[in-house]
Length: 222
Picture 1: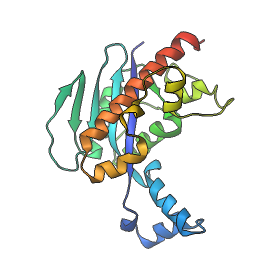
Picture 2: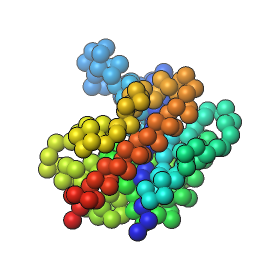
Picture 3: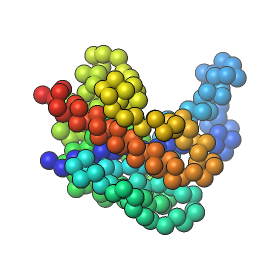
């Protein structure tokens, strides 16, 4: 069965570019300035107020893959680094490329993919008029189609959730966060045009997820 590890990075829209009614709607339940600022910072977490800026895909058997990323019109050339092909494009272009590659794989492996990556990818694709080639939000308990390691490690919500960094450190796996970057920094990095830094961080997430997946397969899969 062919497998592919998938991870994405996202950024939020500029709150000030939203129309007045949308701004009011998003801030409706905020009671103070702190809550309003917190809401603005979290726009990257939702597909209707954010966008996909990097999609990473890694074949765990060959350790080859792609990092599809937005470069905001910089026209960066495609290149390969350590088995990963880095390719820039618009959000629509990287989504189209993602779904075209995904169709050949039997199993998708993610960390919290059902809670974040999959619905984000599918809804952003619809917004961009791109057709998904696989239903990444199919039957929840069918890990052979989509193995969400967050679901597996919590036994579908039976125990509390931890982030990828915590699981990695607990199981003795090198964490992608060891490089000093985490998801909360992506928006600011994009403003600074550090597109490749974000793409490489996404690739490190893929490798950490791959290591956790192998640990799960060896000791926890039934």
